[in-house]
Image (cartoon, rainbow, N blue to C red; front, side, top):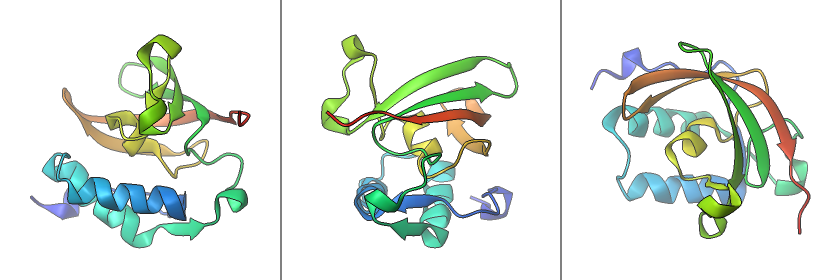
Length: 135
């Protein structure tokens, strides 16, 4: 795997310490493609860790609504990202450890993210990030 072909954004991702640890654990489980594994390792190496209360409002994290645009097709998708144990299709919620969840965690509104999906490497622009009110 040529990691030189992996692009990470100039701005490091911002993660709460809990989410950072969750992603490190996810990496250890080796459930990602080689490309995504290498990319996530690079992102985590440069990530900025903050307390959950100090996360900027426009950062993708757990309990956020995120609108993303797939740049090749122009299609837009809205995801309600939640903790893995709370993800339910009937509630229209998606785990932060789903492929798109892992891809966009820690990025801010406006960022363009590249991630390998089952159908190949895709680019997504994060259009909008809205924090969900805590229940």
